[in-house]
Image (cartoon, rainbow, N blue to C red):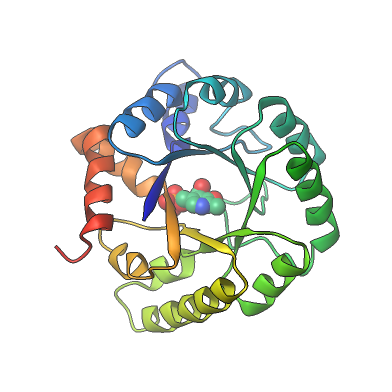
Amino acid sequence: MKLGVNVDHIATIREARKTNEPDPVYAAAIAELAGADGITIHLRQDRRHIQERDLKLLRSVVKTKLNLEMAISMEMVKLALKYKPDTCTLVPETDDEVTTTGGLDVVMYGDKIEEVAGNLKAAGIEVSIFVDPSIDQIKACHRLGIKVIELNTGEYAKSWNNSYAILELDKIKKVVVYAKKLNFRILAGHGLTYQNVAEIVAFEDIEELNIGHSIIANSTFMGLGKAVRRMKELMEKPYK
Ligand code: PXP
């Protein structure tokens, strides 16, 4: 299973002082050297962490795969077409949220998503959609001709260690089976940590995890390279 490392929170620390360190571009290079299979950034419309400068530099520095998380807006489409990340992951975005809250509602925003995804695909950019583990959302993605989905593991992560986790894992299981039958490439992420990742790694049909906060948080104590390697180890041998 592949690991995409989200370096947004390196930029969060930089923006706390509006200075030039730490640099998410350095972080991406260290994460790749430590075994990351891809680098993810979310260029938010309020620019609270990642800036356009980061997207520009990361586009030329990242050697694995650059994944841009973005809202379904034409401003973001223009930036994606300018810098051409390998993948764009469409996510919901509101100003008052602390982090992405829930998946994008593909049933509700189908027309807008179709327009945004159409523009990105025409430029050769792969489109992934961040969705909650719900069959209706997968059906809506299928209707739009989407081929890659990232399942939101946020609710599972919140419930890990209590009795709701089994229900959340069951939802993910049903959706993975359904999406696989429809030939989706299935990714997952949100809220994953060294403690709760094993249950998600157990899904063989999930090919990649996107993990940010926990890796960056742990990097403050152990260094970024080690924090990435530890996650990779747990994804390779989850029960050891
Ligand atoms: N996937 C998506 C679509 C996200 O928005 C985020 C958070 O930026 C992540 C994965 C990573 O979540 P976390 O930072 O909790 O690991």
